[in-house]
Structures are given as C-alpha cells and as structure tokens.
Image (cartoon, rainbow, N blue to C red; front, side, top):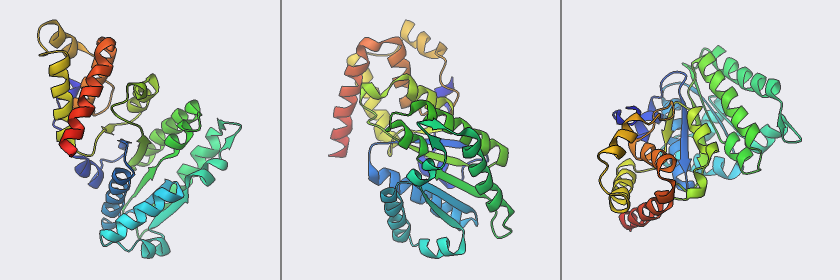
Length: 267
C-alpha cells in the first residue's frame, strides 16, 4: 500500500533530496516555513550547491534570519552567487498577463536559472525553493498555479534538480481538502504535512479511533484498495484523504477532534 512506506523526517527529506524530487510542504506557521526552507538552503550551501529561493519579501527575510541563526553567512553566499533570492511578486509580474501564465516565458526563466547554476564549475548542483503556486492560489489564480507546478516538475526532471514548494493552509480545516489540494499532491513526489510527524499521526489516529472506531473489516479493505496519490504521502495524511473520499460525513468531525488533540500535544 502507498501509505505504508518508511517515513523519513522532513529534515531528512530536505537535507539530501533525491535528484529531480519535487517536494511539497503544507504549512500553517510562518516559523515552520522559515525553518524548513532555511534547513533546505543551508544543507544545499554546505554541499556546494547553488540555492535559488523565490518567495515574498517577508518570508525571504525570515529565512535569512534562520540561516544566520544556524551560522550560515547568507549575505556572503548572495555576494558569491551561490545563493540567489528573488521576490515572488516581481517574478510573477514577468510571466503573467491578466491571470494567465505565459508558460513559455515561465519555463524559459526556470531553465535559464538552472542552466546558469549548473554551468558554473564552482557548484556541485542546484536546488530551488519557491512559493509561486501558493501566491497564485491566494490570488484566486488556481489554474495558473497548478500549471506552474507542472512546469516546475518538468524542469526538475529535465535537470535532475530538487524543487521544494511551500503551500499555506490549515491542515485541520475541512474546506482546505478540496480537489486542488489533491491535484497539488499528485504533481509532487513527496508531501510534508506537519512539522512533527509523530504528533500529527498520533492526533489523527486517536481522532479516527474515537469518531469512527477501529479500522477493520470492510473499512480496512476499503483502505487497502484505495488508490492513493502518486507521491510519498505520510500515513496520517493518506488516512485523511481516504476518509474524505469514503466517509465525507465524518471527515469534519475527525479533523476537529484531531485539532483538539494536536493542541493538547502542543500545550
């Protein structure tokens, strides 16, 4: 079954992402975003890779602070060209017209950035983080956001470069589990749904046990035969997607109970 693989931590995934991997972080905390992207960046810099970051100015400032706290001289890395920061709104202004993504322009920009980094003999590779789709989705430009992810995925495969994306949302809000979220997961190779996988899994499992009961008999058969998204999805998140599809009438109650237990773990 798709959701029974050994689950590495998000730090392991972001430290040494596989070539051409396309990772998706679901975040509901600015601290989690900054911590994850700074870790991804610091590990790339320490390995001699070029690191490209495309985010909001506020997020880039937060990430730079996290890098400095980790002992990374981000300013020196920028001056040397190993670390490149770009404002997501300015980047999108160059490839959008009336809400439509100029796919050729977007693709050319990504490919040019990858090729320039890979052509530099100082660097052993390149990795890229961005929140382009997150920015487009919250402007209401969903189709453009999904298309940008598809193009980024193609570029990752073409150049063997890991691409890391961050998408904001409350993971305990039933409204966030629309078809768009499933589509986003399907265009990524890995999904990181929570900062603490153990706590998230415990909260979800406890909520399901209390709202639905033990998963056995027909329910267990349904879970075993369920077609999960074609990505590495932690078991707790896979359970939630399965539940939304098979028992939508109980889905919101499970999420609310999981939120309650997650708050208890955090307090």
